[in-house]
Image (tube, rainbow, N blue to C red):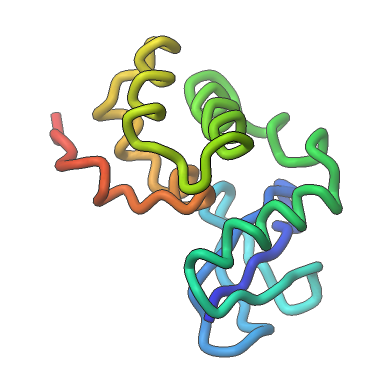
Length: 133
């Protein structure tokens, strides 16, 4: 089961695999504990997570989605993923690669942004091996 919730610290919609619906987990963006008392939804299948994320994003409004706490490259990547997710479900790896290239984001760096990628339903392992340099 997956729990999709709004992080109380950075106000970002996040999710995690959990054993029970109110199980706390750490926000992949800011590290804050997402406890049982924050607005949340559950999903039984990974494919359902994307829909639940969108529902919660709509509830809090896109302006409160945590963008103000992301800066520079991470913000650009987040905005690219957000734009692609409006048109593509699941997000096409080729479209992601093209968009990040146009934004002058290095692919190796993109692949290391696990928290942001996973928040949009992308398994970083699907992007290939990361060169550690």
